[in-house]
Image (tube, rainbow, N blue to C red):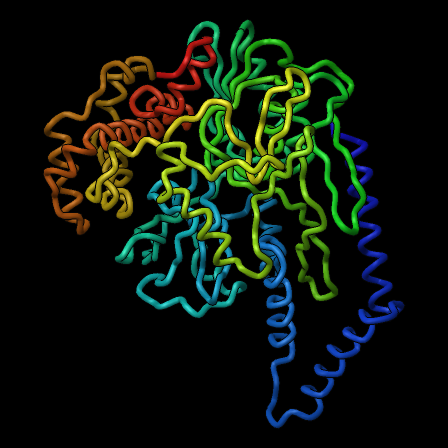
Length: 531
């Protein structure tokens, strides 16, 4: 059931914004604002009627709107009419492509996030990557509305990308096979043991809470639950509230919003008892958990309902309202900030108009030691808050800081492994191996349990993988293989499991073979300290 109180406020907010826009269009404003509106109209009139050459007025206006919004916060954007159609296709599930959320920064495509389970995530494209070449053609400068045309395409078609990654001297090459982009919320759900359940949500969509409740219904009798929100970039606010309602007491404050032109509005859980309201809860987060994920994690932490494990979240706490314009385009305008129940602002600091600095600040987490060693800037005393039940110290200043820090495990990283991933070699090897020997695999491993315990990447399979890598332009590196052998073997095994069974099978392999975050969460779920 939708949170009615918050739903009513959103409806009222949209109506208020629409009325405000109507008033502006009717020029019912006075003072300095009226003079500035008149100035814009005068300039457009002069260009249209006095400029020496023919002018593409729609492009000129769209460029001006884009520049204006770009001088504000990092998440206020203009959405062209064609892009709006594309978004509608995504909502309806008619979407095939490479699976990224993107923006255009200084005429260059920037990866905002990879869609969980999509082809870009599988080959290792990362948030902050700059796409400069597509199929050998230079794509900078580029217009935002043109990007879907050459990144999307029919399932099974291949696209070659050349990417600039912050902190990496040379460009990186990726070969990506387009696919149907998954539009479900739940990646995996299974019993870790007799008492511990695990659920991974990749986003918050219209069906998220229903999917979660169905998964919990298949785990009767568990005394501990791991809710994995790693890499979850957010989504629908009402679903975040409903998800939180499975764990918090009735009528608990989940989040509130406030802005210069928006008075404080609160969102509470429903009045019915929570689905999973008493037993131990562990929430896994990382540096790519954002927005709705941060709302859920922040509420769980503030109410002392569960233990947050992982690394500081992204820090996306700005409320956008999408306002349609008369030609089918829209403006997605930031109207308020999100605050956790204790009063913490989720949004990390930014400088208006400095989108480059905003993304660079995020990239610095990889080089500053924060992700690998837990190093962070000294906490400002004004950003220290207290939880609402036990009075524990929690920290604001951007993102949700976990109760239990788990360093990013980079021990298996090497340039050789990175090359195999970027060229799609690990995935291609798993696919071609099953193309040739699926019947043998099915006969030898009749179920997932037998595969988990019985399959290993043999020397013969490893040699075949190396040969495929060389054929795809990744020279063999003995030292790199020694460093990454365990990680490579885990990923190949996981890809095989996914294609023999399902996505849950993929995660079960990764958790068993190579996932220190998950191991720490299991320890906490069992009441132990992570090793």
